[in-house]
Length: 467
Ligand SMILES: Cc1cc2nc3c(=O)[nH]c(=O)nc-3n(C[C@H](O)[C@H](O)[C@H](O)COP(=O)(O)OP(=O)(O)OC[C@H]3O[C@@H](n4cnc5c(N)ncnc54)[C@H](O)[C@@H]3O)c2cc1C
Image 1 (cartoon, rainbow, N blue to C red):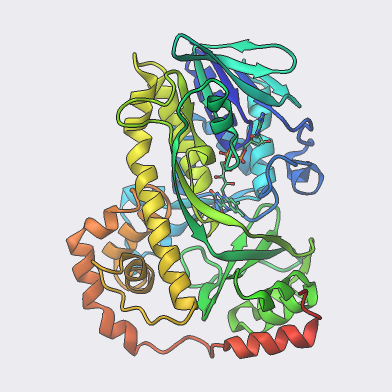
Image 2: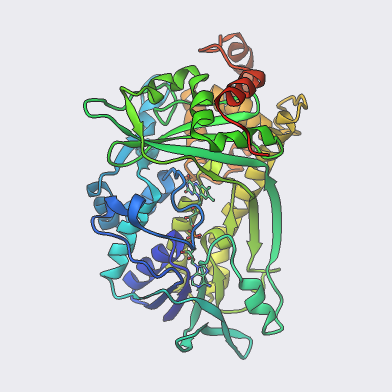
């Protein structure tokens, strides 16, 4: 089959690679002109990617992505590791320390996104895929009620299957409207947070620290703030702070001094920002204006356009807090490679990726909504029926650190190995988690928790907030 793919991010590159390895004839169009540097480890600082706003923002690469690579592109995984990434066996944090053979899937990859993408792009460049860099897709070719290819300035590209992998800001609705065709229905919900982050590199002689969290690094919720620490490749790590977008005082976090002052108030982060341990390698990177979106390329069992499919972020994207995007994109690419060998690609693809995307969208929406209402001062009782989002975050997640069965179910959800709604439907998990509520309440906080006023004072003392 001849396939034309618009967009060469993680989704487009993965799809191109897996389709070409399945014997299909693939053209991949990427608007950004620049090629990744060699070695790939330099990509974080040297690879310009204007088409991907989150290019340098921290990414968790979770179990589902790794499983797709292990099964379908082990050479990519090997080259990512050779570029300085490491694998993190989350399953070894299981309470009681007894894991099962299947738990090995609960392993993430520590790598910065530009480095991961540079390796993947390098493998695609060596494959039979015709990679057209610096070529912007302007529209669709449509004939007889089916997609027949992509319109690009340099000349039309005819194809039997057209893939929209152009990311969150896809222009697919415009492309379809130009032909008088229906557009995908969109479901949307807000992520009312701005993410601020900074990258660091370990000093010579320093080694990564361990922490009790599954990722092995500190993370947590303190009032309206969420913080996370993520290891990267080549002795790097990043610290991320998510703050409510409606509270403009937190805009001061764009200033390195205010950012460091806030981190300094969070006890488990103190060793990470010590000058003896690590040195910052970036300014503060920030991103807001985010949403959860599920875009329906398939209506009621009928595609908006036969022969056109969406994958990756254009199909579904969720709050980056969850870190699900690249895993979903890889799963979409694998499902597309399988669907391309069937008689009805649209239906075959949708039947595999639709339910998982629906569950991811609903799960992220429920948790974001509960988090935002709490940050605005609402008191929420985490009820497993009426407040599922709060129940998962405030009961199941902490209970998973005490019970191996809950840990396994929770981590399979976190790592996109099970659909996000499986945990609501599992009555055993619910009962086990509810049975631990009193024990959790009795557990002391592991460190003194700063208040919002402490953060405000630290930010005021460190910098002049932007209006
Ligand atoms: C702040 C932030 C943090 C994130 N953190 C994580 C994380 O921790 N873990 C995780 O798994 N995911 C994370 N994600 C999501 C992740 O980046 C994406 O889900 C994943 O990379 C798949 O994206 P994609 O390939 O579908 O789209 P993109 O990566 O956006 O790629 C789309 C590509 O299409 C190209 N393009 C666009 N329009 C055209 C056109 N008309 N013609 C030709 N080319 C075009 C663009 O240049 C770009 O290269 C995060 C996202 C954000 C915003």
